[in-house]
Length: 321
Picture 1 (cartoon, rainbow, N blue to C red):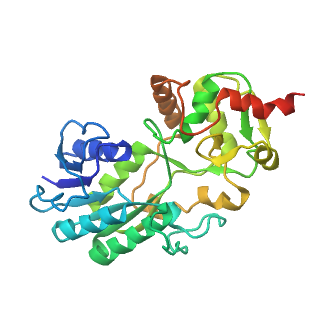
Picture 2 (cartoon, rainbow, N blue to C red):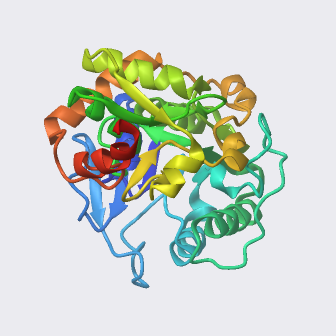
């Protein structure tokens, strides 16, 4: 029986990877503090704080694949020190944020990377993690550079903002979608690929990204899933910025809206991902799954990304005069 160790495994993507590994018939162990939630049935939790010097002491034997989810430099280094020599294959979940430039569409894995200068910054820490992993594991390491992860359970509230917003009805404020794209990968599709890639011994850096869709198509899919006509008001970048709307995520934002100079961020080459067996479900299916999750969690709940209805009305008010 294959033995899979997930460093994490109790939060969103980690749980999805654990579920895929359990479904494949593997023995699955999750090393985590256990504060993010319960492990998937069929997997085993080894409770540990990775800042402790004895964090890995309860892990015995060899591993067919170790999956590292953290970008914390201390965690990445300690995990490699404790486990690299006992792993046949190692998967580091990295990010397309490692690339130095986001203005070039269809850039592949050979594109220039950020030079790590401040390891408290996500992109810098991910590049540092990649270099540590590659140096220690060599041709046994997969550097899975994940793009925008979407679907049920998303803790960032980015992608889910749109089907939830259309489900609430009324006029919906959007950015001008012309020339803009979204490249979201369903969390369960990403997890399934990570499990299969580990089993197949896939290595090297790979952009684990979704299909490229025009933003207009994503908004239309959100409206279709919600069963609303999609009564939208699109404002240009200058107007949105002048009215205090932020890009991409966080408070008072329009999720998935990127500055013009970053449009290549959602148009990464997916050739290596597809060649390595990456599969992606239709956008409409992911949107339906996401909306079902949004409704279960409450479409009116406080969110980590997007505009409240009051903020949206405030931004739209000058347009209505």
